[in-house]
Image 1 (spheres, rainbow, N blue to C red):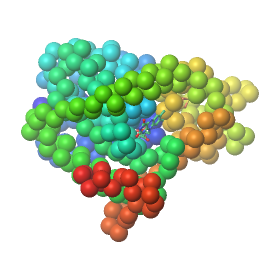
Image 2 (cartoon, rainbow, N blue to C red):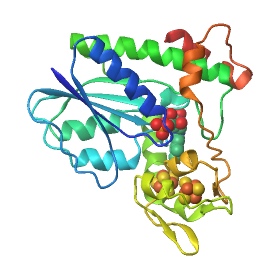
Image 3 (cartoon, rainbow, N blue to C red):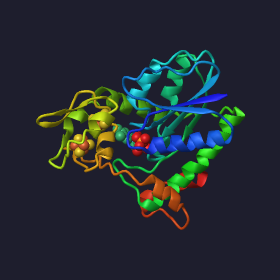
Image 4 (spheres, rainbow, N blue to C red):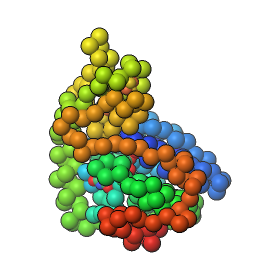
Length: 279
Ligand SMILES: Cc1cc2nc3c(=O)[nH]c(=O)nc-3n(C[C@H](O)[C@H](O)[C@H](O)COP(=O)(O)O)c2cc1C
Ligand code: SF4
Ligand code: SF4
């Protein structure tokens, strides 16, 4: 059966994961199409027998609000299967939940059969050492291979995240959906900006414009941090919310280096051990 992977990625982690999942599924003889979700996208999905795989980073313990709105507009599933993958930067609190997304999909007539967490190297609030990042990428690869087997075999693996996580995710994600756009008002492009226009083209919300006075950030920010992560001269900084020190990794290099001899570097990183052992 054909698999349609639809995903959102702000700083590149989920995009890396999707590329690996596509490779793993194709290796197993499953044809795959991929598509990046944006704010004004027409959420059309290929017709016919098909399995939908939805991948997204975790924002405030749940799916990014823009992905939730996208799912509310997708065509009726009519009993077709859906798989929901979240990629948090931390396994703490179960890495959030996919429950909201499962509900939204089921309301649209999709049958959710797999929910899965794949932790990627954290790059917001805390940036991991290259050692932990390499260990997480190796763990992600193992999880992706298992996931591809589960999809191929048509297995059902649903999660019950529990009331504490579900309640917290509703509260925090609700706040993000309501007030997240304010983050855009806090962004500035410094004098280092070369006016290359990349951030204007890449913003998934289309909320960045180039004016005679410089780069302007509008009212539709989704707090995805893509502009900060992609700016070639690192000119974009948040004035107040400085706890968003987005420093993307060279994922290809870390992946190629492999996990051998690597270990968590401090007490904070040792918290990832049980997730790594389970992966
Ligand atoms: C606004 C925002 C909220 C986030 N909230 C969480 C969170 O609640 N839990 C978590 O583990 N990671 C959280 N993260 C980190 C991302 O889920 C993580 O870095 C992810 O791998 C980024 O994927 P991407 O590079 O595809 O955008 C948050 C990131 C952002 C930008
Ligand atoms: S990506 Fe950076 S350098 Fe290019 S226009 Fe935007 S802020 Fe300026
Ligand atoms: S302004 Fe930056 S952080 Fe906000 S949605 Fe656009 S790319 Fe993402």
